[in-house]
Image (cartoon, rainbow, N blue to C red):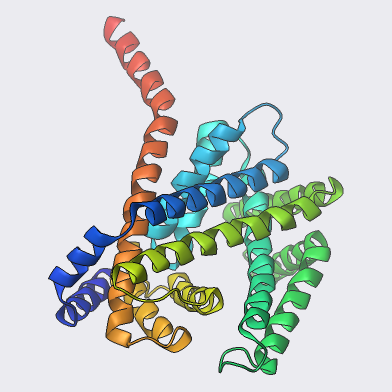
Amino acid sequence: MSVALSGLLMWWLLLRQDVRVLVGDLRDTRLSLLAAYALLALAGTAARAARYRVLIDLQGKVRMGGLVLVTLVRNLFVDLIPARLGSLSYIVVLTRRYGFSFETGASTYVVSFVFDLVALAVLMIGAVLSMGLGRTPFSGPWHLAVFCAAAAVLVLLVARFAAISDAVVRCLGRLLGLSGLGGRSASVFVMEKLSGVVRALRVIEERKVLGRVFLLSLAVRAFKYASLYVLVLAVLVARGMEMPAFGGVFMATVATELTTATPFHGVAGVGTWAAAWGFAGAHFINIDRVFAEGVGLLVHGITQVFEYILGIGALLVLAAPMLARRRRRCAGSAVS
């Protein structure tokens, strides 16, 4: 269904755009701003990899460069697969390529996800204050109250992360027992893995690294939205527009990204991202909706090309040793 939705939205969007104008805007985009976008995006990737490094008890299995490659592959599949299921590729690559346990991968993934939400809530509070409390329809006191409440709930969740996870797993075990499924081998296996994830979360808590994880999470989000702001600015400058307020672009981008967490998000976000950004950009930046959709098409297209090139390159580098071992085994089998 997501493929059909992407196709329909792209057809609808392109009907509303002059393709020659889009091509001209892309040609007129300043290389200096594109370079600034790339540097900020790479800085965000490095910050995300550094957060993984802090969370994982490395034991010499992987260096920072390896985690950067894992992060680039993760970025590739997040963009490619709907509902952000592609982020689970982090666990797959970490376990298959570097030999970490599922529990290590899952626990660090969950902590990273929650801290991303905490950092996002903090940045949204900053965005509301930067736009001026009550000065825009999207920076009213109730917006600030909602974001502050969300940040407070998330901080409480982080403070009791392992205990809450343990309670959830215990409840799941009781439900499986009451349903008569608790004794089945699949249920036993799942419960053992989940219990292992809880133990890994307790280890992370005991290592006293959550302060650094929070600061790195702020850096991840700050670099991400700064890079997208620079890219939006590059497209708007190519179209002869003035510099937009950072708060408005930030809120429009966050609203657009909410669509990526839904099953209706098209494959690679084709069509859906630009359509959502057109709606959000028209509201938060106060520009024409069709114009905003054109900006969304260009911004999303540039980000996809950039992240696919890096992600595919990282995937090839990570896969090279495994492919080499397979070739050696095949050669050995042929000789014998």
